[in-house]
Length: 161
Figure 1 (tube, rainbow, N blue to C red):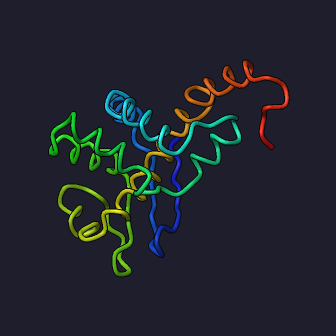
Figure 2: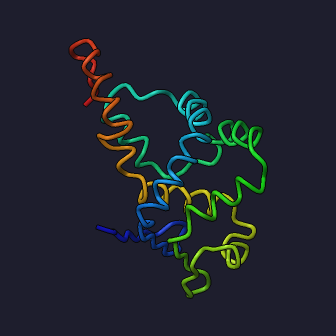
């Protein structure tokens, strides 16, 4: 079932409708291939989670542009700017953002209107869009499942509360 989530980012309304299943799977595959090595650097820069609670806190945080700079530099070094831009626009194809009281659907035509001069805001919106579309990846079928396995290997008493 397709879900819609709404939030406020930097005092602006953002609405995300989940992508259709086929498009979501294709984009998820591209994201994993591209972001995998960069995510390792990002997690290394902010500290690896020691428990499922730590992982949940990390994922629930707002996007922190400064801590992601190393990961973004790594990503940009391996792909063309055009491919990177296309991936961002494709993943935000079901996202609408408020601009001066009007809701704009993010696409090739509207991207500059919505995000010009506001790149940190754009990354926050992208992060929210990724969370809405790929929560399962962060859940038990993805990183969450790996965290369960990691937790099973942790010494007793190491789970943070």
